[in-house]
Length: 462
Image (cartoon, rainbow, N blue to C red; front, side, top):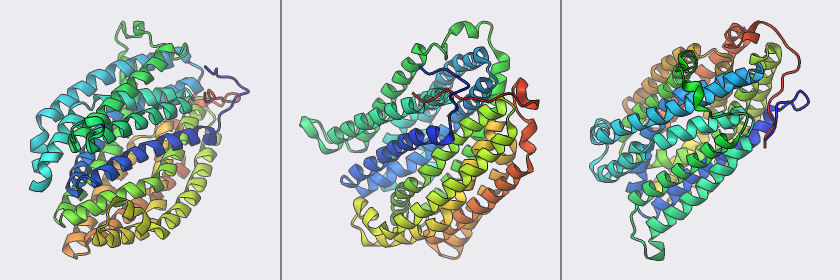
């Protein structure tokens, strides 16, 4: 395993490309699920799409631990306090397992009332209930994946999580193929089969990540750090994690509210949203990967007191991500009908989806401001401001305008996409102003927060 060394300074690019490939695998996994299910039933696709909105909210809840863990480990490593970083590792790992099991049990018991609250159409209810009970009830796997991957990445081993995610994808594809298409004499289980293969691959994935951490001498998964209970470490994780996850949860709750609005537009609109979002995720992943890579480097720099370098790193990352995402948005629009044709041959869905992908040229660059700058603010310890502004913008602009333009003015999904674009740009520009104000500079959690040390270095990738 690599060691922290003053000669081995890790760049955002070195961290970003493995994260990008890892996220690409994850997006491919979701799209392959959708493509395979589309050969089974469009209603199955719509049902899984609705449930995945709920699963996204669960992931945000689990980010309470993983986000706080990532920031604390990065800052402590930047301050060269390896013992404290190791204490965070074992505290976060233990807490995540307990937290995930409790949340999963609640979701399993309340699956049907949750779907009824979302006004899921009758023709989708059966499949949605099956998928939610399995993936939501066993969502502790998502919790463990989120926290363990955050730990591994914070130590600079972004390639490790990339390889593990690739393996999970391969296993999931094999499972989907067997249970959806009935290969090797297996029963054709449809949505149930997708749920089983998804959860199985996630369990194996987090077990491998746990093994990586146990075998890494620097991470030191030593349970002696839990005696006595590290109350201060728990408070620090929650201090960062709750607002950080709150910003993400506010986003996904607003998306769930928007999905509820779209259900009023009919099954065609709901299915079009699922297919279009799957394609748009390919546009977003580079910006998200750049944001996560920047967060790791900024966290280390802030922990070492190198705040001016942290400031410039964020802005440089933003410029690169904006340029690439804008070009990707144009390219995907040009081939929009070809991409949509992979999922469906329904002419109405393809035409509407193409219009949404045209609007994505406006929407996606605005989103980049948020994923890069908010990750940098979070890494510096400035976590409350993004939550406050996020709730205001997501609900006051995205949800309100989605209802107004989509339903009141009968613009349908076109109105929803316009609303989403307005939200992303408004929120993104406010975050840029916040970063440039440098209000985050006095919010570090380490002892080096007020001084600049020598060259900060981050552990190299594997």
